[in-house]
Amino acid sequence: MVAAGAAVVSPVSAMLDSVTGGKIPKVLLINGSPRTDGNTFCCLKEIEATLQKHGVESEIVQIGRKPVRMCINCGGCHQSGAKGCVFDDDMCAVITEKMATADALIVGTPVYYGQPNGGILSLMQRLFFSAGHLVQNKPAAALAVCRRGGATATLQTMNMMFVFRKYLFSTSIVVVAPPRRAILTEAPTFIVQSVCRLE
Image 1 (tube, rainbow, N blue to C red):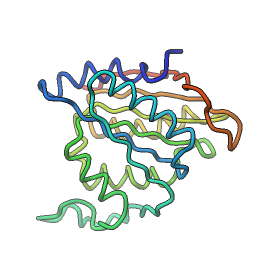
Image 2 (image 1 turned 60 degrees about the vertical axis):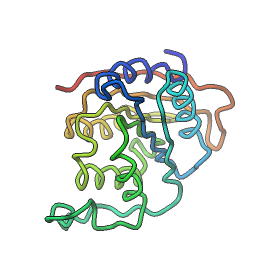
Image 3 (image 1 turned 180 degrees about the vertical axis):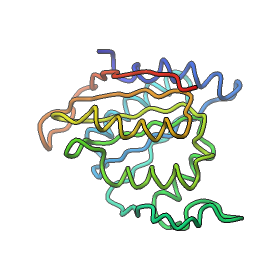
Image 4 (image 1 turned 90 degrees about the vertical axis):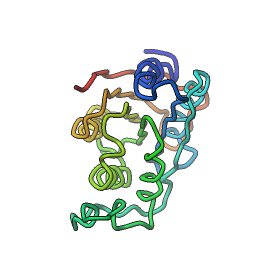
């Protein structure tokens, strides 16, 4: 186990130096939980604080309870002149725009029945399909916040998207949260499940 935030920041900082070419790096953090102030958000805030301590600019984007459409495989995003997904009125459009200027991505999700939240899955699948060029070859990390089991399956699902988009590396983080409806009252302890460099 390692201190809050440090699990992510050490490898991400090193990779960002090589990706940004000396400019101040920017990391986009996505809270895939419908609870905007829940445990996933608390963990992302810890990561953000540590990133900022190391001079890394960051922003947390909340999906919250807003509906997120799934990909319908219409192919509109790959038509000549398309600027992303044809559904441009939900969080996918907002995150696509922010990803254009981000140097790295951290996606946090609660674990529901051994899987990532459905909203974050829909968003990530559309983002990676419609605007994959904006996320390709950038450092990434997946954060799974769980009470019981399912963290490994959740991280496997999230990391597969990173692998297919040839991220430079992917870090998996597991946080075991307190019982249902309880909020973390102190800095969480992150468990780094795996760190791998993708070639």
